[in-house]
Length: 259
Image (cartoon, rainbow, N blue to C red; front, side):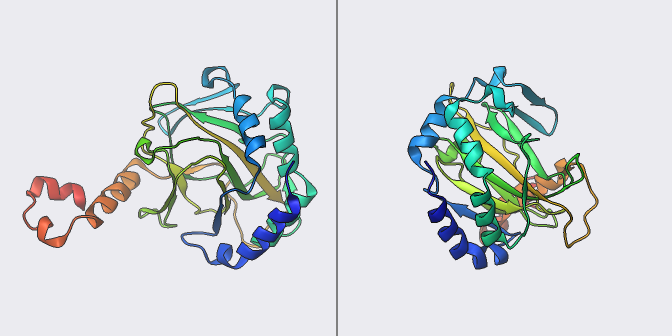
């Protein structure tokens, strides 16, 4: 159902742009996967409360399902195709990372779903699998039809020093995002989701590994940006949008929020 040869051609063409992308290596693809398959996967998504993993902390509020036995036929096809040797070769063509290894257990991956009010704070992912492998790539497949940017929930890619958001990516249906898992590849969507009743943010997540990596990375746990850093990042984006003549007449109590 998936044209792996076409994916390889698109990934090869995007390789140079991937390597030079800011704030860290990444690429965004639309219409990469067949809509019929993704629509079928969408119909197989369980309700968020019934998913096997529930994250409810100060940093994240979301649901996830990575149990193969809980996936429907279309979801199994998608997982199989994105864990195939052909897709790994395409990822190597895009990223330059050789000898990639899939995680058949989908640790941290699989189906992700966020309801209204949910969020995922800015963070850099864990860099080591429990089996000792090095995590190298994230691949996200978004499944949100008729997405309204006013709902928030955009994937934010942050500057590597955590000084603020460098890029926002709408999680629209069929969009595929690939990015490198680095010690400082900070990302997330810290603004709570503002979807109408019955509308959730849905995606499939896949992570890829290697046995060793060229740079020294020893952190095994998720690295969260602090609340202060996230607030500064948000206020910095607001401040950048306010013209200097306007800033001069803003009361000092408001100016403090724009620093």
